Length: 439
Image (tube, rainbow, N blue to C red; front, side, top):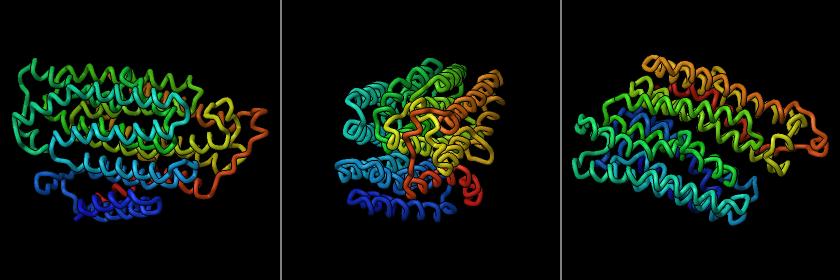
C-alpha cells in the first residue's frame, strides 16, 4: 500500500504548485506512520524492495521536495509550471531508485535522474555559464558510470537474483577480478558523491543552479553515490584497496575544508563543505561494518537537511543583496536578528554541534573509521577542526563585520521564508529524537 501511495502521489505532483506541496506532505506523513512496519527487507513482486537505507533516503527526498514549490514562488521564477513538473519527474525517479530491486533498473534510473537536473540548471540558472556547468555535470557523471554499466550487465548475465539478495551469492574471491570490478563499480559513485579530484563539476553546478536546484543537488542527488556504494560494495571482500580509497577521501576532505576557509562565494564554500562531509561518508561506508554503515546513512540524512538549509539561506541573501560574496554581504544579517539566529543554528547543525543529528552521525562514523583504520584519526580530527573554522567564517562575516555597503541594505525576510529556514533547523536538531522513537 505504501508503494502505491507514493507512486500515485508523486505522479499527482506534476500538475500544480499547490498539489506538489500538499501531496509531498501527505506522502511524508504516510511514510512516518508506516515506519514501525518496515522490516529490514520488504519485497513486492521482485520489483520493489525497501529496507533501512531506502526508507530513510525516501524520507529525505519527500522532505526536501516539499520545500521546492515555495522556493520557486519566493524567488519569482518564470515558467514556474514547467519547473514544478520537472521537479515532480525528478522526485518520481529518485523514489523509484530507492525502491528498485534490480541492478539494471537502478542503473537506468541513476542515469535518468541527470536529465531533470540538467534542464533545471540550464533553464533556470543565473548566468550564461549555466550551459557549460550543466554539460560538465553530464559529462563527468555519465563518463564515470560507463564502467558501472559493464559490471551491471555482467552481473545480470551471471545471476538473475534480485538486487538485495545478489550479495549472498556473488562473491568475487579472485584477486585481480575483484580489484578490477571494485574500481569499475566504485568510480561512478565516488564521482557522484563526489570524492576530491572527482568534484570539479560540483562547484560549477552549484554556482549556476537556482537555489532550489542547489538544494536538490546537495541534499539528494549526491546521496545517490552513497546509496550505490551501500548496495554494491557488499559484493566485494574488504581489501587493502579500500584503505587507499579511504585515505584519498579523507585527505581530499581536508583539502576541501581548507578551500572553504579561503572562499569568498558563499555557494562555493557550502559546495566544498559538501565534499568534506561526503569524505567522512565514504570512509565510514568502506569500513563495511554495520555500525559504520548506520553512521554513514545518518550522516547523509543530516547533511542533506543542513546543506539544504544553507543553500536556502544563501539564496535568500543573494535575493536581497544581489550578490553571494561574503565581502558584499558584510553585516547584512545584523539588521535582522531573527535571520541571524536562524543562520547561526543551521550553521551549528552543519558543523555538528550537539545535540544535532550531524553530531551523533559524525561521532559514530569517526569511531567506526578509527577503530578499523586508526591512522585516519589525524585526518578526522583535522576535518572536525576545519569544519568549525569555515563555519565561524560563514557566520561572523555576514553577521558581525562592518561594511559601508551594508548601510544601504536592509534584509526584510518574508514570514514564509523565515518559516522554511527555521524548519530546516528544527529537522536538523529534532530528527534524532524522532528516529529514536520510530525505532
